[in-house]
Figure 1: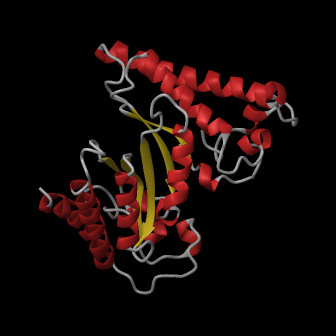
Figure 2 (figure 1 turned 90 degrees about the vertical axis):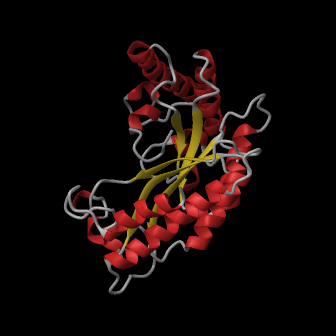
Amino acid sequence: VWHSQTPGWFFSDKYEDNKDTNVETMDAREDFYIHNVMAHVMDKEKELTGSAGSIVYAWDVVNEYLHRQSFARTWTNIYKNSGDSPSYVKKAFELAYGMLKTYDVQDKVTLFYNDYNTYFGIQQTLNLVEFINKDEPEKICRGIGMQSHVDIKVPTIELYGAALEKFLAAGYEVQITELDVTINYDTEGSSASYSYADENETNADQAKYVGQLMKTILEKNRNRDKNVNPKGVTGITLWGLYDTISWRSSCSPLLFDTGITDPKASFYEFINAAKSMG
């Protein structure tokens, strides 16, 4: 469930005109969509491996609700501004968790809420996830995805680490998603909104930040209370292979330069940080 790239007709009356559909119809469409997408994937897993949940171990059920935007026709047209209690977000997790139970994979597949700038809205993120789980017989949202389109100056390593530590302490599995680290920041090329530009930053500066970030992630994960949070950090996903094909190519955000045979200093810092933590 994402506001940004869901086509407008999905929210339209009869899928074809400029009139918004109603909440009851939209609830049914949400149910139909989630049921069929998850059934398709888990049936294919059974076909390929003999069991559901054997390939896809995590689902991004709702993406960027806390940064929803009111452009074109989207969820807010139907459900209005739901604030901290969005019924369709909770419903999405209820439906998705129901599908996990149908296939008996609820103990090995995690449902995630994924968003960016979670380190600037730690409590807001936790409040939303706690709303999703409120009054449920089981914890249906068990994971937080920390989108990490970061810059070598923002956020600070300390702030990022504090957010991760709080999410882990609250018992949520965490995945670091969409990781890239911009340098030589410029607003036009970065597709972001920081109100400054880096000056004369180099690949060496990026490498230092990447190394510190990786060590912080791994340290927070290693030092978590494993009785409260047995899984911890279960994934780190880089947002692209190399700079020249990145969505922020002018800001050199990735670990390789012109191709995968052209590693940057940040690649080695990334790997060495992991090795240093055993």
